[in-house]
Length: 206
Image (tube, rainbow, N blue to C red; front, side, top):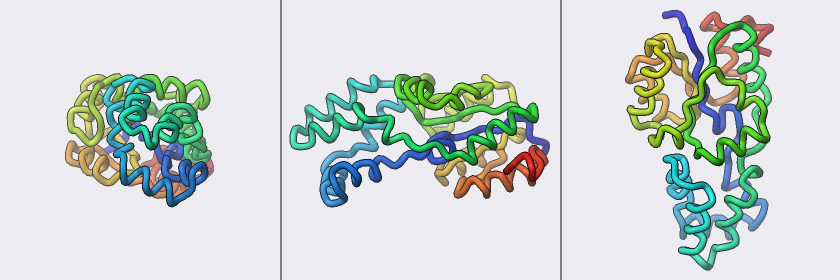
């Protein structure tokens, strides 16, 4: 089936997202392991991705865990350093698709305020034809509802969507709905998939 629109996850597809790496660099691996064992920081972040307040959630978690207060607050205070750097080849692929006239959508687990913050630092996040951001939609991948909402809003048939995501559970849900999919490992692999789908030439996918 011909692809009509390409759907990008953002974290670890267009923009590296490795909070553990950030904290390894700031407090050291041993303390980082202890903090992540003591506090479910990814669950905290899921609340933001579901639409709760960016600063409010993080600062409340910090107050609930006073032994880690300063470190947890750092998730908010230096958040842009957690969401870095951009994956340059993937950004070029996004722009090559745009230049070729292929609609590009985002489908991302991201908070409302944190996404706006990221957009202020990374201009390519403002280049999607349609943005599907979990915080605005108040549902996160891999819940089937977020995929259904994209289908209904865009009007694109599931089998004409090609979706790249780095998480197997997110890809599995999309595939179960009939989407074409790519489990993102490397930008070159994604480039090859786009070329194979006839959306870009090898030269355009460099």
